[in-house]
Length: 127
Image 1 (cartoon, one colour):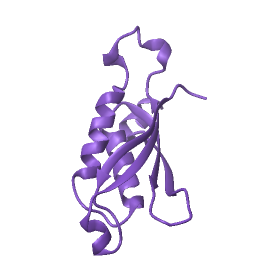
Image 2 (cartoon, one colour; image 1 turned 120 degrees about the vertical axis):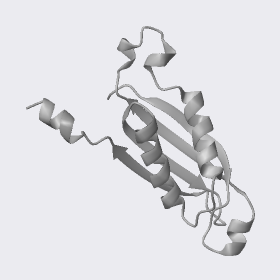
Image 3 (tube, one colour; image 1 turned 135 degrees about the horizontal axis):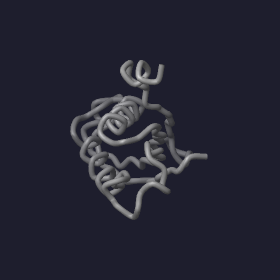
C-alpha cells in the first residue's frame, strides 16, 4: 500500500437533496478522503511544501461543498475527486460521503476512487 493521507469524516454543510424542500435547508454531510500523494513520505524532508496540506484540503472541500446546491451526493463526490486531482499533487483519491437521511439507517453513503491519468506528453516522454 502506498503512503496515504486520510481525512476521516470531515463535517460539511451544504444544500443537497432531490426534493426542493430537502435542498431548502442546509444539511450536514460527512466526507472521508484517502489521498495518495505523488511523492511518498520518505521524500518529504519534514517540509510541508513537499506534501499535501490536509488543512488546506479540508477548507477547500468545505468551501466546494457549500458553493452551490446539488441534488445528488454522487455529483458532489465526483466534483470533489476531480477538484482534488486538479488542485493537489495526488495520484489517487478515494471519496466517501455519508448522509444521515433515511430513518432506521446509520447513513446512506457513496464511495468512489479516481486516479490521475498520465498526460500524453508524460506518456511520450517515457517511450
